[in-house]
Length: 224
Image (cartoon, rainbow, N blue to C red; front, side):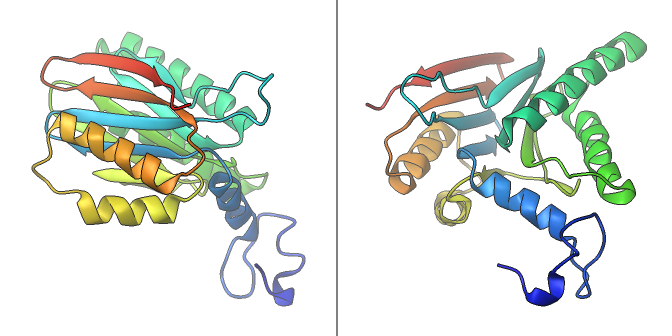
């Protein structure tokens, strides 16, 4: 995966001779080994599908989608322990924002805070968070969907896939996504992308955020 000339540069947060931060690339690899998560946005709202996977039939799988506030949800793929830290940070920040400004925190504000938190580690040292976050929200303006990478980079998305087989799922989404999809279309697209690419027949959580009704529903889909 890496050249010998990169040896030593992967032990700390510093640039390799070709301008890469190897620790960040390791963190991205941890994400690729995590459960698949798909998020799709349309004018009517947002759909998030998160794979429910456990390494043993005796162990309950961990949820990959967490509620941050009434209008905000966060999904992740990567290291579970790291996710707990950022989920707690997100919840505290959202409540402080609500108390301070008298309104619910929006996706852009929360994403800005978490991306700075992730980037600060790459700037001042420490191990990067080994996960990628998807922040989804509906408010009075429009549905919002933002992705935060281990480096702290963030970008808005209409459709995104993270976790294992992310490239294959993204190719499927790019081929089948179009701007006039409705919420039901997004739901079907997410399910087809998951079931056609991931052959394990794992169960999954399906979160639907309806912008028009301001209602959010979550269901567990069992495939086996």
